[in-house]
Image (cartoon, rainbow, N blue to C red; front, side, top):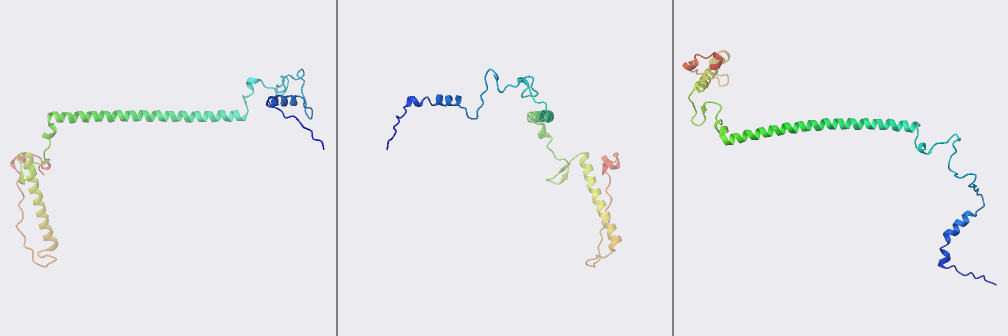
Length: 206
């Protein structure tokens, strides 16, 4: 049996693999149509008299339904962005106005407190709202104290009068719970109007 020995290719010959493939592609014949460069110079270029010809600058510009839909969508998106920016501007202006008002209020309050610290005016006005001493339970001097004392006496007189009237009309002389006879006290005398309050109207005395 004879064996055919082939000399192995070296690395220098292997470098020509790409050139060999290009040569084989150029020389292929099976099911392959080659255009003559003199007849068709650019196979992918459409002739100007063809019905589907389109210039290069208009090739990627469409005027169909997709373009119209995209145009409408861009308009809606632009309107949304414009509305968003308008609302944002209104909110920013309103917030700036609010912060300016808060700043003015804070400055006014700070200046007021600083003035109170310097003059001590706040401590002077720290007094009771009624002319009555809560320690010794006595009324102070002055017209307001007389008016307050007269009001207290008048309210006590009205309460005692109402109590006597209720006992006389509802329960008679006996206590409805115990049945014992009710010992009534002398009727309360109506308090006299102080001399300093006689010149005032009735609604200012009481």
